[in-house]
Structure formats: structure tokens, C-alpha cells
Length: 322
Length: 310
Image (cartoon, rainbow over all chains, first blue to last red; front, side, top):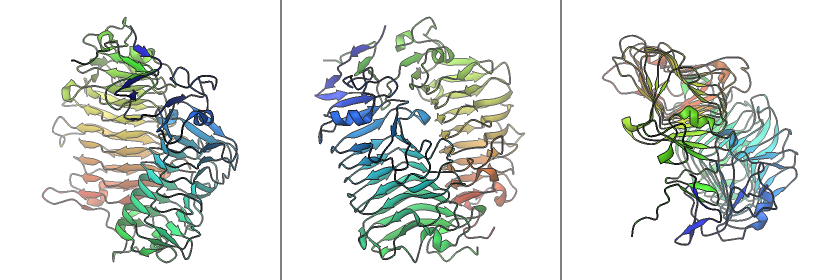
């Protein structure tokens, strides 16, 4: 005896019913590179599309459409903007766990997954560098109100590749209110050099929260780097983060191009650890001018990983002698 | 007007619809030792399989099939392969609370265990009990990217186990242990009941969080060691928000230098005597807001001190 099947879907009170907690009045599509075909209609898990690129063409903007990417789906970005989300209000939600989370890979240095549209949710997706060294900017976001939720950027399979640019780039043309929530970014192992994790070139009101960020060998600049062409960036929020780096030459965990000032916003409950540098460079006191109407609460910093000390409150009188 | 019933389950757009927030596009099976038979198809609670191992045998690799284990399910694991989760992506989720949770009892031989051999497997809300005094592992991890969530382990009164959870070299990359609970069922001040609670060889990007462990460990309660393949990949683990109480002076968190850097944050640690500084043996780790106490009657204090020099 099997399920009572409703292959075209069931609606209750006019809302499509699927498992999970997502609710929408829009269309729902499925994608699976293993079993799918772009000749299917993508409307049930037994007839999924084979690519996100194609599924995105079937979405309608501003209707709350959802694309469910199935376990084990893998889609390789081979060029700049290979996947480009241009329709507002679309969600891509991965199904699965561990290495079976839907995986977006990058197999050319300039390859990228771009989000140009507004109001986008990307959830439970694993980004992976594949086999190519020195990616220049694999995830580029210019839309407003884009959220990466429960996602992971996990360098290459053994983390043995360099990353020339930043894992996530918000260019000068970036929109506002980007959110990184409950994500894990580990971009390379401790023998590889990387550009950084997030390069913020523009936009206001971004939030980075509840995430684990490891950038083993950032050689200069910041793990989260504010490079805005504007002289002021507004209301950035950093909350509940663990940020680890192993480079003695990195300028700071969060830094800004000289002359850029962050106005408003806050840092709350953030742990920053970097070895063999001085405590000023862990957070950055002089170069990043994060002080205008910007409050800091429970920012802990640590400049050694030799475990003889705990991180101390930024601004406290207790500082390391190292 | 009552609910419209779909006694065989409902699928919408091919996805099984279950209550709760869980979503899968894989197959769903049910297991119940009280009402099930392995001759059933396991596709609804009224036709559940009798054993988890049989249900695993019906799962397809790589599609994240889900096995719901019914309340009051009881199963005895009597060999090292008695419960081998060897199909990639399988999730085994227990239903029920307290003693009604599905219970797996390790018995007959010290090698009886739950083996997580597949990659990206998930086990949740299970109660594991020792049925004999000598248990090598409650859970052994040999695959990558496993998740162990809200699992409780219970010892016998005189159990001497090696590990609650152990990963050997080549397994456990990306492991998440969330909410493991082990409260020693006997006087944990008398005799060692565990070698380690959680031990990884060459851990890679492991997260251990929200665990509550009260036990008598002969060595590090949460520990790691170098193993085959140790090197640059052994970094980026995070041990946080755990409550650890040991009846010995041995370290509650002992982490190898080959596993650097690791973040160790927001843990509450009690050790029985000895120096508070011995509560953690971290060779290469970033420590934030870990509080330790080593004698009764005083509050936990930040350890090691902030800003001290190594």
C-alpha cells in the first residue's frame, strides 16, 4: 500500500501543500541533475528539471515561486554569471543533508552564481570550488533583500585550492539588506591563500549573523572587507559570529578601505581569533573606521591560538602581551 | 466535520507530506518492533518494518530516504553490524519522548554498536542503552558528513565503555553532534565508566554543540588525536555550548595540535579536583567564554584567564 498520490499537487485553502515549513501561493518546481530532464514540466519530484538555470526561466517574478533542489543535485558554473537570478521573489531551497545537499560548483576561475534580483532566498545549498584554483568571485549579489540561509561554502573537496577573490561579493552596485544567516564558510585549508570571505562594495543594512567563518590564510585586507566607493556605509550588523584566521599578515577580521566609515549598526557577541598578530589587527582599530554611531557589545578578540588565554573583551583593559 | 484522512500517507508533487517541518523527496519508511514485520512494505505506520537494519536495506543511496522509528520501538543490537547505517543520505528519526523514544540496546558482545558507515547520514531522537558492562562504542563513525542529533546514551551501573561516539581516521569530516546527552546512571565518582565520551581521530570541520555529559572519563571527555592523514585539513572545528561534568581531574576537552585551529566557545565545564587549568587541554585553539570549576561551592570562572600569556 502506498501513498495516496496527487502528482499535480494538493492545495489547502488555496495554498500548495508540500512537506516542510515553507508556505507560498506561487509555483513550485523541482530540480535534480541525477534524474531530471529539462523536457519535463518540473512540477513534481519524479519529473524534475535537470538544471537550476532552466528552472529559473520557468519562474514568475514577484509570485513567491520556489525551486526545490533535490538531494545530490550538482550544477557546475562554468562562466561568469552562469547561473543568474534575475526574477524578484524566487526562492531556491535545497533538500538533503551533509554532502548530499544540492551543490553548486565552480569550474572556471571567473565562474559565478549571480543574484541580480531582489527578495531572493537561498537555503540549504552547498557551494563548492570544484577543481579550479583562484576563483575571482564565485557568488555575486546585487539585488536588495537577498538572504543566504543555512548555506555552506566549502572550498574544494579537500580544501586544497586557492581563492583569489572573495567567496561572496557585494559590488559597488550592490543592493541593500543582504543577510547571511546560520551559514558556514570554510574556503581553503591552512596551506592555501585566499582573498577573503565577503567583500562589501556597497549597499546598506547588511546583516551577518549566527555563522561560523574560517579563512585560514587571508594574506591582507579583511575577512569581511568593506571596499565601498562611498565614504560611508550604513547600519551593518554583525551578530553571533565566530571568525577564525591563521594569517599573521591579515589586516583585520572586519576592515574597511581607508576613508570608509561605517555609520550606525552594531557588533554583538562576536568572537574573532587570529594568530601571531597583535590585538589591534584582530578587529582593526585604526584602519577600519567603524566608530560613528556604531556600537560594540561583547566583541571578543584573541591573537594567539596557543590556548594559554581566552579571548578578551574588545576595549577592556586586559590585553595580551604577545 | 473531521479531518480528511489519508491513512496511507499523502504525497503532493511527489514529495511525502508529513506533519512537522521535515521535508524529503526520498522514500519514507516506518519501523516498529511492537506491531511491525519485516515482511511488510514499511510504507505506513500500520505496516511498519520490525527492525531498523531491515529498513536501511530498503533505502536508496544518495536520495535522503527517511526512516521514522515509532514510539516504544525496542531493538537489541547484538553484533558490530547489527545496525549499520551504510546507505548514503539515510535519516533515521525517532518519534516519542523520554522512555517512549525508540530504544536500541547494545548487548551480547562488546563490539555491538551503531555504525555510521554511509556518508551524509542522520540519526535523531534515539535512546541508546548499554545492555552489557563492556561496550566499545555506542556509535562509531566511519563515513563523512554525519549528523547525530538529540541522541541519549545510558550506561549500566558498572559499565566500562570506551566511547559514546568515536570516529576513526578517514571518517567524520563535517560531522555535527548536536544535543548528545549522557548522564551517568551510577555513582560517577567511583571507577571510570568511559575512556572518552566523544573522540575523533583527525577531525575535519567537526561541530559539537549543545551536549550535556556527566560521566567519569578516564581521559578527555571530548577529545581528538592525530591519525592517518593528519595534516592541513584538520582544522576548522567548533566545540560550543556544551555542559561537561567529569568526576576526574582529567581534561574535559582535549584537542590535538594537528587539529588547529579550532574554536572552543561557551562551554561550561566541571572537573573533580585538580587544577582548573587542567579542565581543557587545547594545543591549538581559540578559546572564548569557557567557564570552569574544580571544587564544590564556588561558581564557574572564565578559564583560562582572558589576555594571559601562554
